[in-house]
Length: 362
Image 1 (cartoon, rainbow, N blue to C red):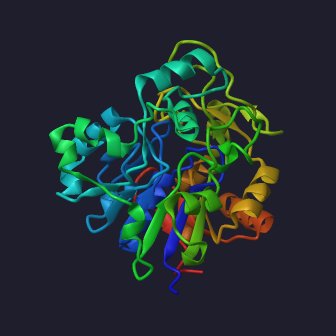
Image 2 (cartoon, rainbow, N blue to C red):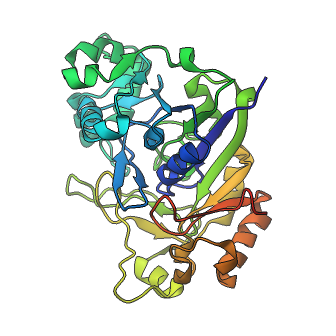
């Protein structure tokens, strides 16, 4: 049996740059098949070399490789309007490719969003994902899966997707990329500070299970992290405060403080905003205990360290490891010493080519 599957997951609380690395890996290794089980409560961003930003909530980021077969698995929680917009907005990149969606992917309705707006007070993005999952688990009479909803989709979307069991497309003679969503520290069972977590599991084992892929097919698990983990804002799109939780015992800091630490230029604004709700992200000191915990459960074979420019702004858009400052190299060493896992991918900026790849250099 061939080990042919790569998993990319976020080792913290999201927004570590999975979209960037998924796109990079899809192109570098010319991935044959990419699959996700995303919900519309998280966005995944890929920025091309010429600064074109691609933001996705349903279609795999491997979209950027024109040869990759795109699959959406049975664990996906789909907002039809978002799926429609993504297909329409990325028609050129799709280039007549079909997106295969599992018939049991769940459809989110307005009632799911309304339920969360009325009942959740723990930092939810109120996209209806948790409510929809709960309804699917309860097997209520009015549950609507993709197989039921297909005929309600616009013609342009129906012509682009195929409703079929995604397992039928799995082939251990081909390369497969599993694109994870959200972050391990938001895992409902293993994440930090329940109930300030998401509505599902976000660990490597669950990602495999959701796709219907045998564990023995896995070749690499790439865990993406950042030097300063984030959480979503306490300010919601509903205009009310909604506490999103602390970060275990890590101190919350400010983007201004990070800017001072990395010595970013005065005219550079490093403040980050959430992909979906466009609110300022909360930011924290690195939590080394949580990092060790994430490694223990996910057993990554590689770590992708993104946003190293927040350690030292001289690393911004650096393309060579030798040109990184000693400050950045010492942080990388601390990550490797703490986890026992090699840092093989280093993100130095937002674009696809802002990556130092050490897989062939160390």
